[in-house]
Length: 337
Image 1: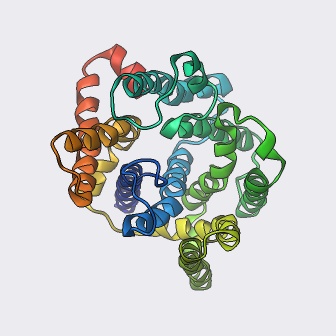
Image 2 (image 1 turned 45 degrees about the vertical axis):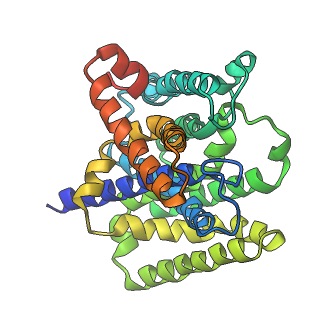
C-alpha cells in the first residue's frame, strides 16, 4: 500500500509540474514571448515562481522514476541508450520539426525561424524541446555513474551531487558561456543536480526522512528559496543574478520535501499520466489558443490565460489517444513502441 501511495504522490507532483510548464509557456518567459505581458504585471511575478520550480521538479521526478528501474548490467549500455533515444530524441526530432513548420507557416506566431536554419533545431536547443536532449544526456551520465557504483550510498551520492552543483554553477557564470550549446549539454549540466535529488529521494528515503533534525534543516533551507524569489522580483540586476545563482542550494531541499509528501489528487494524477505528451504538444496549444482567441476579438488577459492553458493541456491528451492507435505515429511522436 505504501508503494501505491508513493507512486500516486509522485504522479500528483508530475501533474502539477506539467501544468506549471504549460502556464509558464502561456504567460511567456519575458515581455516579448507568450502573452507579451510586461512588468510589473502580477502574471510576471507568477512566472518568477513558476520558473523557480517547474523544470527542477520535472527533472527530480525523472530521477525518482529512473531509480525504480536503475542500471542493469545484463541489458547493456547500447540497449539503454537505444531505449532512451527512442523515448526522447525521436519525438524531439519529429515534434520539433512539426512545430517549426507550423510556426513558420502560421501567421501570428512568435519567434519564426528560417527554413534554411531548420537543421539547427536538431543540434542546438530549440524552444521547449531543449529539455529532451538534455534529459537524454543526464540519463547517460546516470547510467555511467551507476555502472561504477558511485551512487549506491548516501555518502557517494553527496559527492556526486556536489560535483554536479559545481558544474551547474560553472555552466552559469564561467567559461562555458563561450562554448556552443551542442545537444543542449548546458541544460543537462543545469538540471543534473535535480535528477540526482530524485534518485536519492527514491534510494535513500528511509535515512533521509526518518530523522526529525534532517527534515527541519531541509525545511529551513527550502524556506530561504522564498526569500531568493522576492529578491529576484524586487531587486532586478546584480542582486537578482546572485540570488538565481543560489537557487540550487534552496531547490535541492525543496525537492526532497516535495518528493516525501504522502498525498495525492485524482485530477493531477490523471494529468500526470499524460505529462510527456503534454510536454511534447502543449506548444501548439499555447500559441494556437492565443491566436484563435485574438481572432475572435478576445484580448482580455484572464480569458486568454485560462483558455490557452485548457487547450494546451487537453489538446495533447487527445493527440496522445489518437496517435496511440498507430504504431508508426506512436513511435515517432510519442516515443513508444
